[in-house]
Length: 160
Image (cartoon, rainbow, N blue to C red; front, side, top):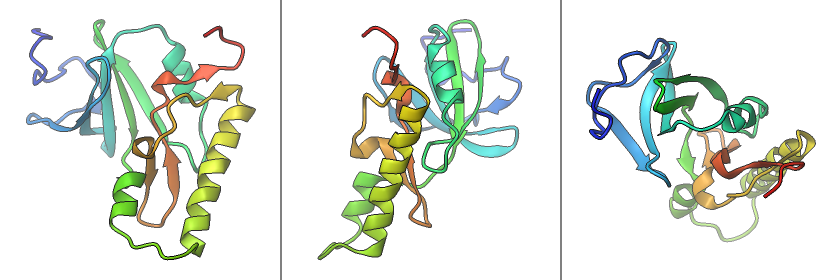
């Protein structure tokens, strides 16, 4: 398999499916690619990263909370790791651009409380969110906030 061609379909994957014509959502840091795909027939966002230690796997699998991006599963082909996450709404940046805010509203308070609740949950799990920015916050159609982008997250006891 030619891994230099980023459009090669990952064929040994059992649960995570990428379309034959991959829809790249974004390019992340360190050659990370993010696609729309599915995990066990559920629509998902699939993150393809170079194979690393299992810290990120542990990090992602310990964060189940209403305000955290739901981790669905993980697979590898030996060179790349494939992580499947729930498909969510738009980034906070896109959400704010599409609305006019004149004053604090109930929706604004719900979003801010969701952000705080999500980060508080991570801290109770011993995790620190190292990359909190509007691109790593997703807002669903019901205005529920989801923190994502935990790749740079650290365990509190881990050395930096």
